[in-house]
Image 1 (cartoon, one colour):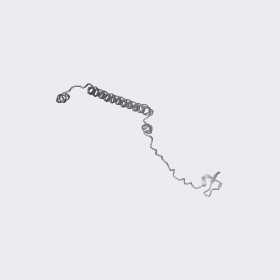
Image 2: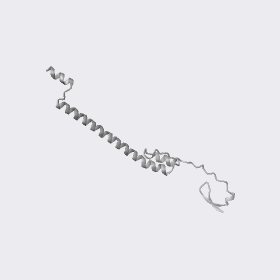
Image 3: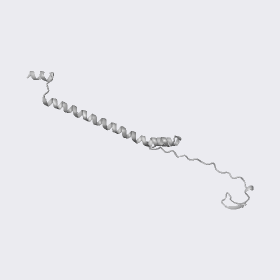
Image 4: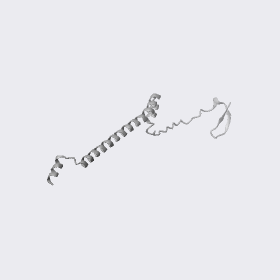
Length: 112
């Protein structure tokens, strides 16, 4: 004898072998899909596809490393561009102030 709950909510003693089979509602599987932030997408894909911890570690290590390297390269190029502009400006200013003679400037001086 076991205690069972009837459909109306009451409990009773009954023989489990003589009860009708209870129909259970099919299980509903709820799946939530969230978009990962860009810096974690690779790691989540790696974990989800079974690649393993090596790919996750590589993504965690090389992601920021790549950003740092590209930033350093961009900073170096910006510095070189600034130096080139400053040197060209300095040379042109020096030539103009010392009155460097070129063919065009010597012709204009003769006319005076």
